[in-house]
Amino acid sequence: MPQRFGVTLNQMADIDYPAQIRDLRSTYTSIEQVSEVEKLKEDIEDLSDQAGAPDLWDDPAAGQKITSRLSHAQSKLEKLETLASRIDDLEVLVELAQDEADADSLAEAGKELDSLRAALAQLEITTLLSGEYDDREAVVTIRSGAGGVDAADFAEMLLRMYLRWAERHGYPTAVLDTSYAEEAGLKSATFEVKAPYAFGTLSVEAGTHRLVRISPFDNQGRRQTSFAAVEVIPLIESTDSIEIPDNEIRVDVFRSSGPGGQSVNTTDSAVRLTHIPTGTVVSMQNEKSQLQNRAAAMRVLQSRLLLLKKQEEDATKKAMAGDVKASWGDQMRSYVLHPYQMVKDLRTEHEVGTASAVLDGDLDGFIDAGIRWRADNRNAEV
Image 1: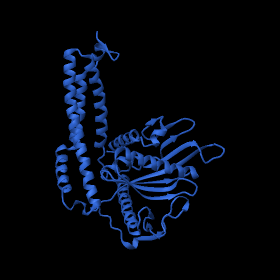
Image 2: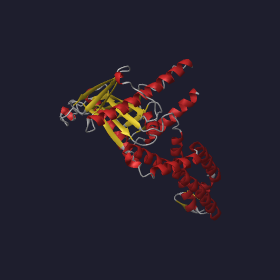
Image 3: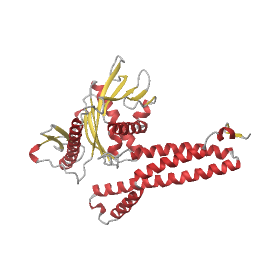
Image 4: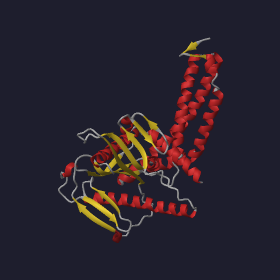
């Protein structure tokens, strides 16, 4: 019996390739239906017309949004069409390999089968982003919690982690505000992720994160536990009806500052907005002018109030239904760097032993597991 790659034809014959390919087609068909391919094509045509308008870049923010949505839609359609073609090619490859008893081709077919399963599972994740604001860009705020200087350092580590994750995916980001701690790290930081579905994707990262390590700030080398909170809100759009009367907002201006309180701006360009009825506070200092910082702060304030409004509506609906169960725990993920390396999500049970890779932006496994976990919980509540 011919044997290559350590696998015999008899062993390969144990794989029911036609049944596996039927499963792939079934999964693909489900994804295709949810993706509404015909509507996707219409959206691409409409966005292409808008992107070709001569005055597109008269409003840079609007132009960026249109081109970003067009790129996302084109990429999604291309993935769907490519996967359909790969499934067809796999079926032909298997038929030829089995007719000719070609072990090399069957081994190649087995690898392609595994690759297609993984690609379909990844694409299936995007179909679960069907929440009201899931298709929005995201505004992420990280705040240090209990743990002193280690918590501030952890907040800075998380900022780097998310920015590296966005960089890996080619998502543009903009840091809107950074408040530095006195000794090291950050009290808080706010940044935007300017990509379609950034909110739906990153919203599963909201919650309390815990770090366990030997503190680099402890001269006795003791183990330290520290915490940081991550908030994710959808970026508002001009069509959102969030009106904030001027008399409900207090505006404070101050000088921007860098690490250690060193002045990086000699004018009062930083802005702090306080929404008096809710006590919501937003600070912005990373733009060059007070006007720019105020506009950015107002955009984030409106986004937070929009989400707050939705949360209040959801809470009312749950109370009417008699369901007061909380969806998220206070602590959702632990990062352990000592005495061993492990990152574990306490909701999904997803864990890896490569903490350094996760902190360098390798988050997809956790995000995908979180999106599936959230979808399962939503379905259970229906």
